[in-house]
Length: 293
Ligand SMILES: C[S@@+](CC[C@H](N)C(=O)[O-])C[C@H]1O[C@@H](n2cnc3c(N)ncnc32)[C@H](O)[C@@H]1O
View 1 (cartoon, rainbow, N blue to C red):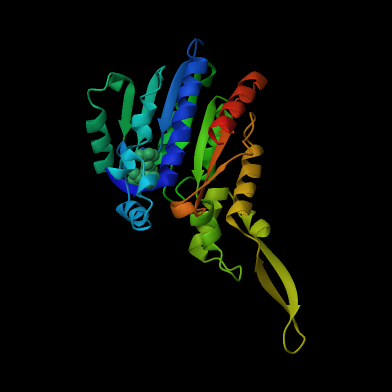
View 2 (view 1 turned 90 degrees about the vertical axis):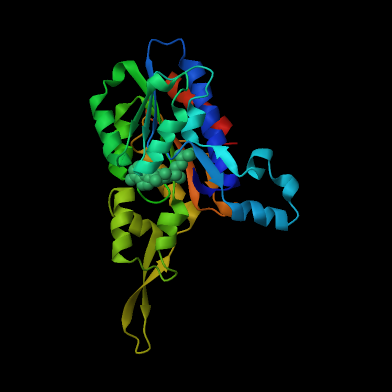
């Protein structure tokens, strides 16, 4: 079991689950192979952090704790993916932590859809690039769920997904946690954070959009350059959406969910459709908008 959740975790997983169900239902009669790829699969269950539950109890809000939260355990993405009314043909579960992928395998062992599952202990980016490159996409469709805790997702991976023209992507983008928070109030970014931001955005163009260079005068009237921070979690999210729109031919949802503990905006749950077919992308974006309400 893994402990990191709160209400926002539940909200994220419910949105994913509803989309997976709608997707498999919509495509169940098509002559296509359907794939679910969970690149940060975890253990299959999520423990809602005790501090969240306790804080609610202290604030006299115990009636707001749903029954399963009171038990402090909810089903994770992998478990939910196996519960759709119509199955996927293949489930790919990737997780870097060997203990977690082992726990997930044990949990799902015996499930009626277990034979369709593949488990792999490796880095999400490497696993995705391999899978995307090896699959012949004309007869296959997929959903990829990127649910990192930090900035592990590389732009190259997002780009490879977009190029399949066959995958719908759900991306928990760490807009505050790994981008906005890395930029100080004075618009300074530590060199190690620059590398990480470059990987997330696929280049250094984020800098001009999130930090403004201004010319001012010092005490002796000499011109000096100072930085002004323009970044906010919302602006960071808008930049990522705009960048994704340039590569996802089926479009990117302008509706997204700000998520984070206690109502704070740490992450943004984003949806993108790589399929350029107007019929497919219209339906995908419509379903995504519904679940992102
Ligand atoms: C937020 S949790 C995922 C939770 C899961 N989606 C669920 O709903 O149960 C993020 C997971 O990513 C794993 N992880 C971290 N870095 C990774 C990487 N580079 N590749 C694959 N998994 C990674 C962590 O061990 C952790 O289990």
